[in-house]
Length: 221
Length: 255
Image 1: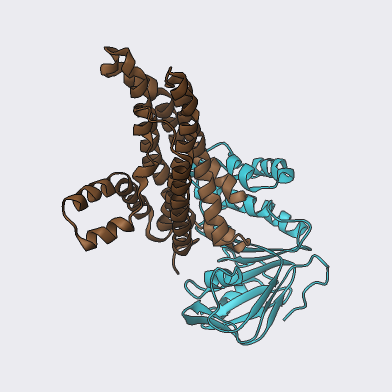
Image 2 (image 1 turned 90 degrees about the vertical axis):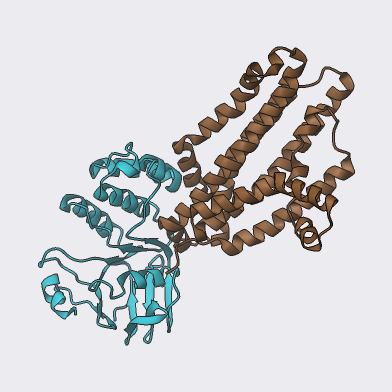
């Protein structure tokens, strides 16, 4: 368990002991309370163990099977299979969804990650669609309040170069943005200093500063 | 209004609205040229009235309902509905924003049709002419009152049962209300049947909102009392369909 940051804009998620998630019957249970504050937290589990279910529960689009949780902040949940109409372009998506003040910034960022904002969404590669979705979420963050981004496998299909650029944004905005990122790490030395893990039917929180994927993956079953 | 803007952008980019715009603008002038009105110039204006409003009805029930259904289905299936739900945009608000976006495309088409009728098919007789704009205005109001709840229902049904169901059911209701109830009415005049009588009683009488024949025969504006009665009647249907639509509407596929 970790203490949430005390910054007035700091977002937080509190998962009470006894929280059970699932679709009708429990997929996973938290035996200990967990409090997550601003910054990046990884959600790790094998396929079908409840990563997406936990994110949907925290987004309040799915009811928990039992127990309680609390979230404080403006929530955005980015489903893994989120897709916009194949005919509209990323530029149109940004114009429709982003605040006017951040539009130009988002378009410049799209240029940095080599996203062609004039190409129809349906003609973009998987990685470029993910970039569109991620940019939409990242630039919809509200600076005046705490934010919670629930990201379901955001980096599948995205190259390491782009990933690094997104991680720069994550580091810069960790004070008022809490990111819970479900993922399947792809290299052993990847640092996962704050990780929620679902092992079997039990969920727990690990936050040793030096822990890496190579250490954590042995815990998954 | 982020979902509203996204839906507007989607419909705009798909460009099918342009075909409707072309049909509504061009057909009232093109169709009379290939009809018997070419031999009898006196028939040009009635032919234009028929072409104008019929083109609008066809565009509304085919393109309008299809678009509403597609947007409702896409919102639920693509994860966009769930994304907005997580940000705090309720299902009611999502339904409203999608409906409003489709409706915003339908309103200009309706106004264009009314303007064509007003300025390119108005009768020369001063008495008839004075009532013309009132009748056109009444038609616009009743037409939009009929289409508005059908669009919402198409969106809602599609979000739960799929786009084809949303479109087919509302198209069926529209056609039944425009033509089917008339046949049922004639049937009941020939032979009384309590079941059919009840069915008729609870059927949406959309044919009363179709004032094309009234324009065609220059029958003048609807009496004020009759117009308000019809407005209330269609307002009642709107209230019922709005409730049904909200009950049916889903922001995401079932888990």
